[in-house]
Figure: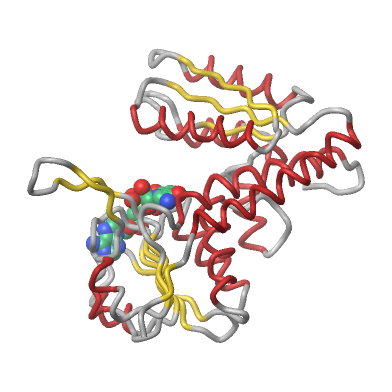
Length: 293
Ligand code: NAD
C-alpha cells in the first residue's frame, strides 16, 4: 500500500484558522489583538525570508506584527535594551529573535533576556525546564507542530517506539520530551550514534532533524512506520538548478513508510502555525491574572 502523505500545509491552514478565531475573540474581549515582535539582526538571506513569512502569516490571522530590523553591527547591549522594552510593552505578547545572530552576540544571553511569558519560541531555560518537568509553558514551535501531525495519523501514541534523530535544543530534545509525555518509548540519536540504521529500523515513529540531506534511506525504515522529516537542505541538480530536500530520501522511504511528510510542505508550515498559536496562548495567559506561565 502506498504511504499516506502527511499534508502539513493543509494542517497548518486548519491551525491558523483556529488561531484567527481565537484572535478575534481575544480582540473583542480585550480591545486589541495579540502582538508579536520579531527581531532580525543582520542581513542573512534565509533569515530574511523566514521573517517576511512570519510577518505575513501573523497579519493574516489578525494579529499585530512588530518588526525590528537591526544592522549587523548592532551590539549585544543594544539588542538587550530592545528586548527589555518589548518585555515591558503591553501591546506585545510574543517576542521572537530570529537565529542565527551575528558573531559577537551571546545567543544564550539574548534568549534568556526574553520574558518567559513572551518567549513564543519556547527557548528560554524556564520554558525548557517546564517542558522537561511536564508543566505548562511555551513549547518550541517545530516539535509542537510535529506532535499535531502525528496525532492526525495516530489516535494513540502511547507504547509506540519513537526514534528522534538529532539532539538540538530547538528540535530534537524538545521533540523527544513531547513524545515521552505521550507515552512513547523514546530514543534520541545523534552524530555519535553507532549503527543508526538498525536503530531507525526499530522505530514506529521516526522524526529526523539533522540537516544532513537524504541521510535516511528507505531500507532503514520499519515497514509501515510514520516518518517525520524536519530537515531542510538545498541541493544542486544536474541541470544546474537547486531543489529543497529533507533528511530522508523521500523516493525510497515512500515505499516502506506507512505515512510520511514531504519537504517542502510538511513540517515547515506547521512551525509558523505553532508560532502563531503560541502567541495567542501567551496573550491569553498574560491577560489572565489567574494563570501564571
Ligand atoms: P542542529 O545542527 O542544531 O542539530 C543537528 C543534530 O543532528 C545534532 O544533534 C547532530 O548530532 C545530529 N546529526 C548531525 N549529523 C548526523 C548524522 N550523520 N547522524 C545522526 N545525527 C546527526 O540542527 P537543528 O537546528 O536541530 O536543525 C536540523 C534540521 O532541521 C536543519 O535542516 C534545519 O534547517 C531543519 N529545521 C527545520 C525546521 C522547520 O520548520 N521545518 C525548523 C527547525 C529546523
